[in-house]
Length: 279
Image (cartoon, rainbow, N blue to C red):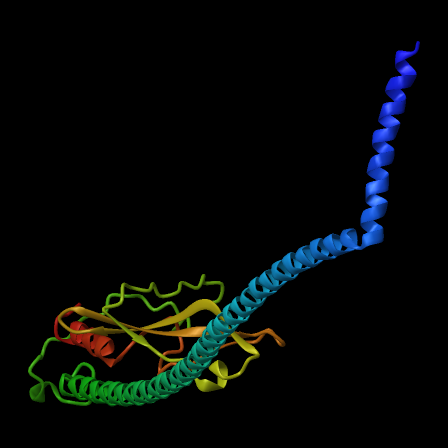
């Protein structure tokens, strides 16, 4: 029991001695000097560290500014190039658009010229065919006139090369010539055409929006007889007025009223068969 207190007293004395030394150090000012020196050293170290960090921050900021300048320059270049490309592209698109309009205008003008030329050629063709038809009619009439003899004209038998009279064995019925009442009408059968003449639709129908093509082609044939049968078929599109329902088509040449008609060559040939060949 006596050891414990003695040990505690020694410790207290050591502590007391240390405290007294500290008090003396403070009283003498040595402690303050050491603390100031330590504080100054820490302050200098912290200042150096701060300056070093500030320098690193300045360099980083400068590098950031440089990078921003570089990227800004790159973006400006790219933007300028993009705008220049857009401008060039728009300019090229506008040029191509004008070129397309010019090509379409030239195409329309060429189509108009071709239509006019075709219309003129068709008109010339119709005129030539009409003149040819008239000439053939005159030739047929002259041929029939030449072939008249004493049996079918006022010529005497001495003036006709054919003196034989063709007997008529048919009995007279007393009926009027031509189609009889109640007789079933038989239309002339159309034949395979040897030539097809397309009649263009008149502008009065094609240019009028009220008229639309029905898809039906009106056909009328003019049959001619030579050594071989020649069939000219005239075709023209039919139009229907969407407002009134009227159906119209281009006019056919003179003499084509029925679906099938015969020109003067057929009549002349029949006349020759009747008067020269006894058919």
